[in-house]
Length: 509
Image (cartoon, rainbow, N blue to C red; front, side, top):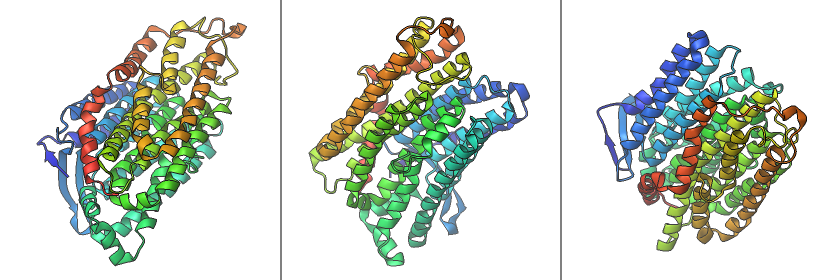
């Protein structure tokens, strides 16, 4: 794996900055939100700086490596390529959006914003760590503040929702931990780069078999299960609707916009590189589960009457396309045409991760604004005709909704198009059935637009407030990003494609 380092520990600074902000916010009382805004804006600038420092080769850049506990295979090893850097930028943007949306937190605001910043640090650490022990610490670190944010500030059923979220994700973490302990016993290493190199030559499977017997397939299933919970993939998704619905909307923005990407990232950084042949072995059932995630997620969204649950199931559906693209890659001995399709699908998956994060977070932000203006209402049948009293609100939320629908010209279209462009030659049956998800999603989004914004205005919403100048100013960059990436996707693709080619060159199926 190609690596180069720099004298300035940018990644350590980026990971530590939110923790410093959290400590300050905790003692800032009513000024905690201002501290969080300053911290998240600074984090975003630092993340963008990391993005500009990516190596053109597509390999790991900004590498930091120090001995920690060598006898246990533990190192402080950080680095990013195009995939990791893009996830840093996404996490920074979504956390800033979440903090901006949370201006009505009156109960212990200092603790709330401190937990949000700790969660941001966990995200940054998960997307930069290249040693399993170090990575696992941040993977778990992000879980704890998310649990308390749901438990302490959520809706009336926040207790069961938070517990279910915690139990599911902890079960996934245990599966990951057991699998990596087996790998460490067999290889003496926890370094992702070294293990990827061993896997690319077939040595990893040989070493595991020599020490533990033919268990590589079961280890692969354990790792897949750990990440499937986080994405989430059907049937591991049942924690998500309750958690998304009961969490405060700004926290839901973090759950869908950034935390769900940790699962997809883990598949690309850990599962596929280390267990490519095993995943190829069970490719068909995995594709079936991916298609089920897409189609059933969309159909479940149709049945919902709560806007947050509609978008929660829609989120499951959209992340299913990422799963479809990833599992379709697992083709042994791919020829030149198949390699081009793999590259298209992987570019689409990474772009979809970013675009879905921005769009889904924006939609839950709009739901938060609806709740604030209606006294907590968010039923899809509670409104109607809102475009008349609130035309700017209706227009901007309409852009986000059409982005989620996948309208050409908006960011939601490009990633899905590339995924299908890559998957059709690799797994045409799965791709064909998955198109049902696109059709049903369109019906869901158009139904939301019709019931919330069209038709006669109920008398109680005749004075529904439109967006004020501060809200318009806050939303403008997000909507602008949707338009920019829809029209000029090469802003991301040109930087990510070298990483895609580098990853595919090191993967073995």
